[in-house]
Length: 102
Image 1 (cartoon, rainbow, N blue to C red):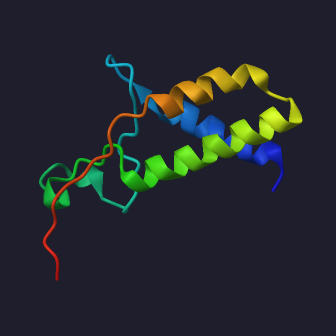
Image 2 (image 1 turned 180 degrees about the horizontal axis):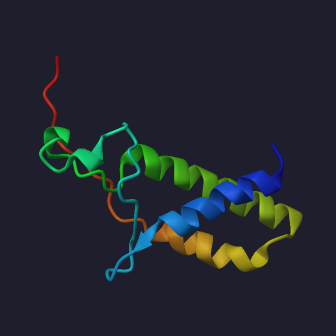
């Protein structure tokens, strides 16, 4: 995979993340476990509201850390570095909920 493809993925997340009034970035309804949010709040299991899933935050963190390292090493896209650092430094908290075990 080349750098341009990774940048396209980063562009998607830059556009998808929501920066709220608290200055934190959030993911909303990314259906990380294919939660069928369109069925309404009564369908969502365990009170899950599909905000800042730990899996999504981990993926985006890994992506941006990789891009920062690659672009710094290659001395390209320096104008994007402040945004990527801002996102990494300001993710809202991961959503955690209790679920009974089997």
